[in-house]
Length: 202
Ligand SMILES: Nc1nc2c(ncn2[C@@H]2O[C@H](COP(=O)(O)OP(=O)(O)OP(=O)(O)O)[C@@H](O)[C@H]2O)c(=O)[nH]1
Ligand SMILES: [Mg+2]
Image (cartoon, rainbow, N blue to C red; front, side):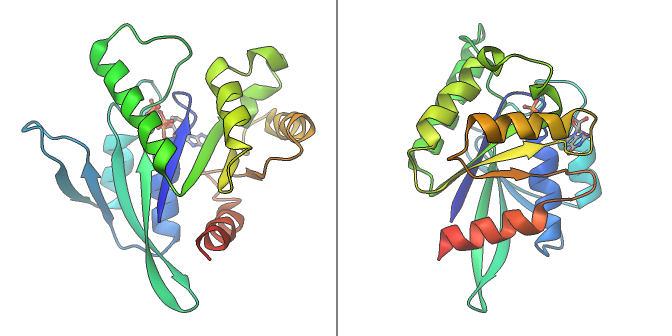
């Protein structure tokens, strides 16, 4: 199953994919970058520590191309491959840089054909904004995703101040969307997310 993780820059997509892969029991990060210097997909294996050091940043944009990480889940006692796609953050508006526009187009294309989409929102920022400024991308994604069978919102950074209010606002405004509160620092919500994905797979 392919799970595409989309969201604005800096919401924590990369840290989530690394830590969730570890939570699911993998021993290392097994990753395919969409294009290496040769233009061909490139496979890499990284320890979790190195992956966090190399792929996560306080500053955006960090991820500039789709990175597919392989994890496994048990479905009816059978191990199933889970491909978690960590994607470049999507800003509102048209990116000035042609390479960034190309990567965003690829991300949206993969989201269109994915079995499951996880849309990540920084819950700690929601309460600081008014609804109409949740972000044009987030609003468009929520509008489109709620029509799909396998779409969920990750209300991320639940360890941060303001996140509980942000979660409340999201749940009030989008009562028909599954919203899972998660922190990739404390790993709160990983169990619920795993159950959500297992249900999507069966
Ligand atoms: N407090 C808190 N910080 C987090 C959490 N998840 C990620 N971060 C931090 O948020 C920052 C951005 O994390 P990334 O994983 O690089 O975010 P990203 O969405 O992949 O960013 P781009 O690749 O630039 O789009 C880093 O400083 C992370 O340590 C979380 O659950 N809680
Ligand atoms: Mg990233």
